[in-house]
Image (cartoon, rainbow, N blue to C red; front, side, top):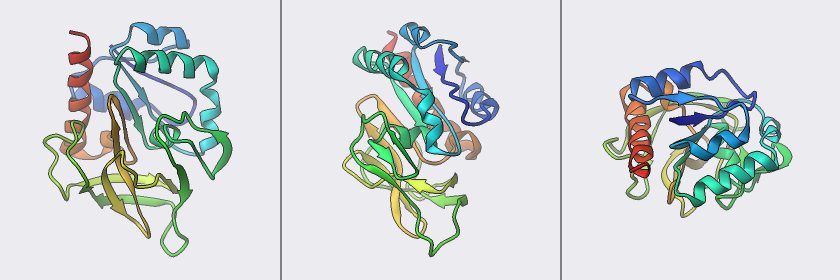
Length: 200
C-alpha cells in the first residue's frame, strides 16, 4: 500500500479519492516506522511551510531509508516544496533531496495563485507519461520552487517556476493532481504503477 503522510497540513480526503480513482490503496501511517513496508510514500499538504516541522528526524530517517530501498516518493504542493532545501516562508530546513530554495511569487500578480495553469514540459518524465505538453493543471499556492535540472515541467505565474520535478524515484508536483481532472488522475496512476513495479 501507499503511505499518505498526515502532518496536519490540509484535508487528505481529496487526495485519497484521487488515488482511489487511480486504482491505488493508501493508508495514513500513525508512526514513521510504518513506512518500512509501504510501496510508496506521498507527502501532500497545503498552507504554510512551517507545518513541515512536524516531519521530524524520525520521519526524515524513515523516508531516507525508504528512498534507499527504491521506494517512490511523491510530494504534492507543499510536499514538493518540502523536498527542496527550504523556503523563505519559514526558517525551517526542507528535506533537501532536491537543491534550491522556494520563494514567494511576485507581487505583480495575484497571490496566492489559484486556478488552472499550463504545463511546459522541460524533459521526458515517467511521472508525466501520457500527459500532453500544454495540459492545464489546478494550482493553489503562494510560494514556488526554482526551475533546476530536476524540473520536468514548468509553468509561469508572474515568474517561471517548477510545476513538476523528478530525480530517480523522488517526484513532486506543485499543482494538485487530485483536483486536475483526467490528466491529474493519469499522474497518480503513473505513480501508482511505479510503486507496484518497485514491489516486484
